[in-house]
Figure 1 (tube, helix red, strand yellow):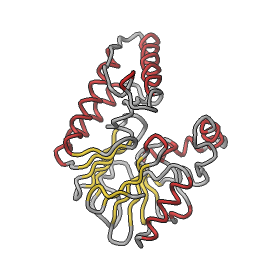
Figure 2 (spheres, one colour; figure 1 turned 180 degrees about the vertical axis):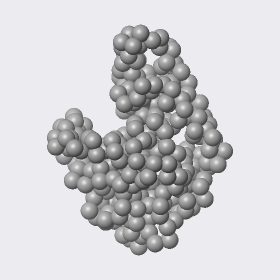
Figure 3 (cartoon, one colour; figure 1 turned 135 degrees about the vertical axis):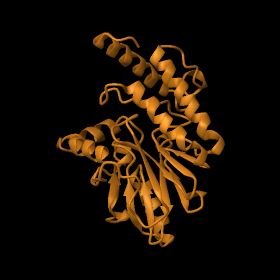
Figure 4 (cartoon, helix red, strand yellow; figure 1 turned 30 degrees about the horizontal axis):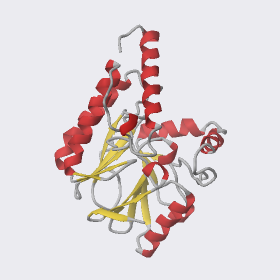
Length: 278
């Protein structure tokens, strides 16, 4: 079910890790951002759009994680965009013929095993490097590209509506998840991304994270500060005291603590390998 969060901006939330698909109404149809996750949910989304008389005229994937790369033929043949680096990363991933099989095998360990449509996964057109806005006939959508979490990650600012679509950042249920494989300075990259988001925070009335609850204007800076405090604690090897991990985590999200422990361990190993302090 689509829920309006601002004029002409609607959100469909999946039951799977509270994934948020975002619909932006334009003149001739809608821009669809990060649709997912299960086939039945995408069917529901397609039905809602058909009943509204709004075809999908453009798609956008905020970053190259499988759950942000999904599509279904019922959504139509609209161009699907991402940043140049995001698209290049996806091409590299899908150049391995076994990539989709590995995703499907990973999903066997989840409650959505066999329910995710992978046929049209990752068919993304990379926008030219430095592109500032999504090319489509609708409200201007500014691309804020950074390297936190995944290569070519983009947050999207729907300027006329005051909506920030944050991708896998600024969540109230997920901690910052660093790109510990694809970047030389994952801590620095994450802090720089938070700085970029902070620069537009004053223009935001509604925050839509990739996973978790939609927030109002008061939540934007609060979540930026929470994520910055977590990254600083991760860098220093301290206890972040973060309510998203440990016994204070929301029911069903206790596994996030294991993610935190894994990040601490991997950062420690990087430091030992490179001979650098945390």
